[in-house]
Amino acid sequence: MASHNTGSDSANTNVRAFLTKIGAHYLGRSFNHSAGSAKRHWRKIVEETFNSKCAYCGISETKVKLTMEHLIMFNRTECGLHHPGNVVPCCTPCNKREKNKEKKFVGWEKHLKFICQDNKENIQKRKKTITQHIKNEKYPKLSENEISALKAIAKHLYSSTQGELDKAFLLFTDIDKTIVNKM
Image (spheres, rainbow, N blue to C red):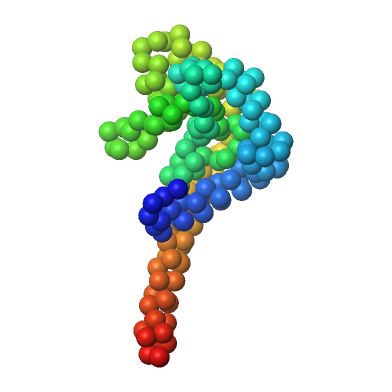
């Protein structure tokens, strides 16, 4: 939990809720991985597809806690969907993406190469497993136009959410000046 909540927190939450809803649209159902059939689906991905190991480094779930990582990042700049084909089990150290020279997060394939360093066998083996997972789970192949539309909507949703917070604050200060402090 954040120790200091900001407009960015609520704006990011709204963007993630939007990407979750779009993921459910393509999947044909919700993917609430904390309950019911989606939870069982997630456990199947962890246990059967990735043998209860981190998708990047291969460390076992018996040694570390594995969390869910979105291959295409689940944010307003990458617009990765919350969908079974876009999530993999990941240990905490591997769940920290590297940034490129432009200070943007790298894609999952470059991240995998960074994690595996010069071990080409591990890179190829894990890349094949992840790529097959994406295909098996039928992650939608979005066109450039669809991705651009998602990014435009996410950007609008982010800025309008922050704008609503600013408006609410101004409304409060107006009420406080005119009604509350005049009594």
